[in-house]
Image (cartoon, rainbow, N blue to C red):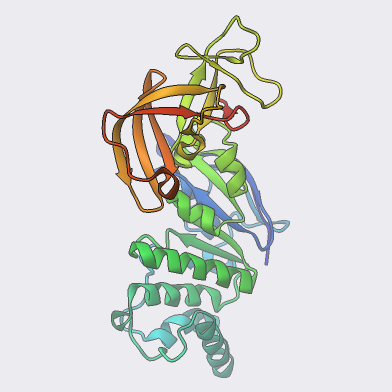
Length: 350
């Protein structure tokens, strides 16, 4: 296994820089996810790691060894593609054994390793089936087994769940996480799905316009985004600007409402705070701080909770409340008294 170091990595296509001086360290055995919108450069970054593209600047190291210039078949990387890239004319055993045969391993060793990895991904007994005879989830596991059987130092996965339905995606991301921990392989995973990234990752990196915006544990990035792009990309949120207030008892005002914040030293006004929809709640009779009135524009019942789109503080806000506590959704035009606790907003950069 290996740790990975990206050192000021650059990749350009024509006049466009698609990987812009990215520096990043990924620990040995870590599950690291590159998360970002389509076209942000995350798949290009994965291709640079795999050796399918050459950088225009910077370095890539596995351990202490630079792999820039090393051809793909000598990098000891296993790759799982978005479309699985299975050979339709080969059965499961032949698909999985392909890399070992290319390495000219003995037949006995090939059989032993293939059967072991098929058992690990719960495909034992299906080794003679062809890809067309398998479900989407089974095909995905064949692709994963083919990458794992060569015992790579690094496992690379490019949106491997994008072709599966919603429930199977959840099942397979749990399976991928289990298998990665079982084998202990350093893994770099690409997705644009925030929930998927948070569910599988030890750490993750947010990519936008070829730049690394923030790297850290999923909960760190979700609760403490470095900037407004990361805040909004990581899930539903509201960004509110706090204006100056002569009343020193408050941190400032939002649309005339005094804002009280309990989070240590604050920047000079104006500054921006972030609220997730579930950080806003109905105000009780004893609530005095950060209390405001709202009017319901729309409500969406989703089972465990109710999402309200409301007019408040001079703009539209999204508020998510537990349905068991809140009861039947309020109708459009209904008034709500809402609040947020002084210690719960997050001050973020631009």
